[in-house]
Image (cartoon, rainbow, N blue to C red; front, side):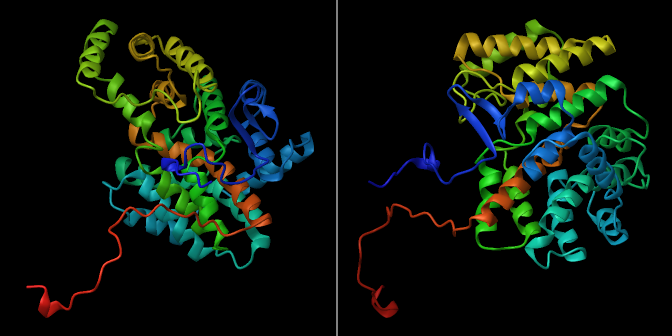
Length: 372
């Protein structure tokens, strides 16, 4: 029997050994490791290695891998020129999409044996690609794209602000990148797999994924959440305004999830980091407003916050501009996308679903001079 579920909801579109999402008794796991354990104990570089190579690294392997990523940070001069010429008012997601595609011209994938090297190059390069464009256009400075920071999260913050981040900011970014790294057959990952299934090159697969994440129904909820919470000067004002929005049936971004039914297991983790950052800075207003909005949404709609909601205030406390929130998603999810491209290529079949036709019945062609 043909499954006619809209949006492919509930349709199993393939097999994967990379992650479990929302499965009863399993929660969110990356290659069998729970997100709680990874967020509490691992570095993002460890998780990247796990997703790319299928297993956690040894101490020696992690050291070598981290050094490899550091060595791959250097931005090609032609890419810098491109980034300088991308207009200031361009959405940063479009910067990464264009930069990724252009890198495919500079450093093309000539055969699939290069795929691991290209994946690592993009993991290393996306933070510098984003920050080079942003700092050049918004601060009038040319950065090298390289810092003394060994972690990708710390490296990103150091380039963005021109100084080393605090320990807690560095740690939050590490956790955030882990939480966003992989999420099974979500829209952008599936787009990457569809492109990979045609035997297209690696850059085209990732460009497809970035373009899909660009859509507000997939990425962008953390930006929308920030635009909401920063409107309010206290929690009472937030509750009053939110009740009015709900009465007018306005959509509140950052709540509920297509797969999770009761909670997003990542939300509590990033919420705790948002609270820590606010307390460190002696400014918990945005956190308190976020918490009140969560309470109202649970009480009035029975909805839970997803990862994007508290990520907004956590990023704000790190001084990250709202327009860069979704590109951080790319900096992380490139690991999961890469793993799925590898997996698709290893056991490939062209992805070509059918559709249910709802157009007119068959009809006769009428010559143009007889149509009146």
